[in-house]
Image: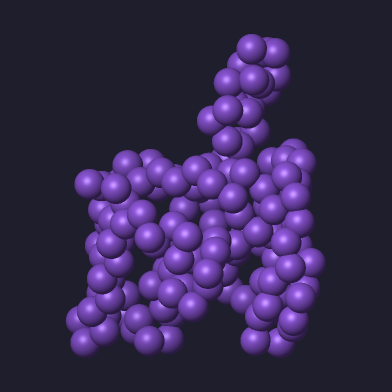
Amino acid sequence: MPSVTYTSPNIQIEGPILEVHFSISSELEKKYIEESKQIPVPIVVKSLIDTGASSCTIREDIPKKLGLEPIGKIKINTPSTKDHECFQYVMRMFMPLQGLTYEGVFTAVSLEGQDIEALIGRDLLQQGIFIYIGYMNQFTFSLM
């Protein structure tokens, strides 16, 4: 099971942050190859592991930069909004050095005023292990 362990100077302030790459889905990549289309370069972002988020989210400009079309819409609730309608996209998230890959649906949100571009939610966490060791300023994240 591939995993990553990070130690942060102050995990309470920063939170469990991972640098991850986002790209088009493997299915879309195959289609691009068959059609001799150029595959978009992956976008590297800061992602926060958020056990309070029921699903993974991505800043709304990132799917657009990858040329993705939404697969649908969903209404979400946040601490400051209720029934906010957002587009959803199928994307691949990966950490090449650690061999971690997740392909699934990401909800595009503004994440305005945040120092992150994505949230790793419980839909992804249910497929792995997340260990938060606060007194050591450390966390470990693994995917099956």
